[in-house]
Amino acid sequence: MVMGPTHAMSGAAVGLAVSDLLPPDWGGPTSTAETFTFAAVCAGAALLPDLDTSQSTVSRSFGPVSNVLAKGVDALSLGFYTLTRGKRDGKRRGGHRTLTHTALFAVGIGAGVTALIVRFGKPAIIATLFIFLGLALRGLAGELAKEKGWLAVSAVAAVLSALTWQMYPTEAGSTGLGVAVALGCVTHCLGDAITKDGVPFLAPFITVRKERWWELRLPPFLSIRAGGPFEKVILGPALTVAVGLMAVWAIDGAPQAIYDAFMPVQG
Image 1: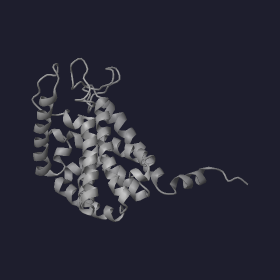
Image 2 (image 1 turned 60 degrees about the vertical axis):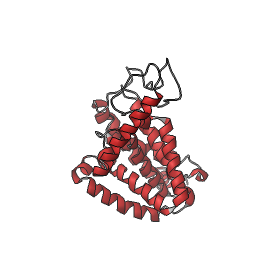
Image 3 (image 1 turned 180 degrees about the vertical axis):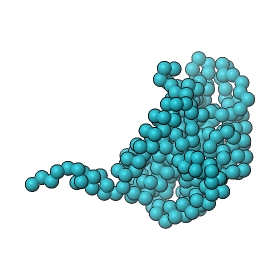
Image 4 (image 1 turned 90 degrees about the vertical axis):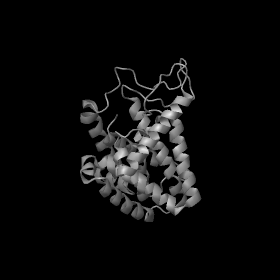
């Protein structure tokens, strides 16, 4: 699997990029606080598809609760694969990289989050923030979060979700959290698609050579080994630098201040 920090960092990068493009009517952020919240939720959601295996970062994020949930999602994913597999799709012993690694799941979970927020309001917003900010902490903090343990991650996530709610009051921005969740899941799948194993992103709707669960992947000479040297030495650090620069740029007034600082005064 692609490492948790890489998934989380790529989700943060995509969240920061899309926050500038998403219209406010669709939940696009309208302030620096909302932009950072959108990106953080996207970063957390970029870990979510790996909830289909107990070996993943996300399955360890909330201790026994997330571990038990991962086993349930694994079984559910395997059942869904078995019911929908094509004539040439082989039998599987586990559900990893099936249901939760599809466009269907990304759209469904994003729409579900939006529906819950519209229906229940503040409690649903705080719950969404708690879950996905917790995942973002677990992914972005990497070894530090692992060292402190899931109880510390959960406690920090609880505090952050309560504080963030105070900075995220608009109805449009709150419902836009569902967009951030869907976007994070898609980002995860695209990250897995550049590995040698690929990902069945369009399953089970598009059949290729009698396979419904065919993997979307790059040509072998372009694909990378998950957890390999390229990811650790090049991709991970590059994403970290990109997120840092994008975060600075996202601060209200920062682009103009940077421009004024480096451009000569015309007199």
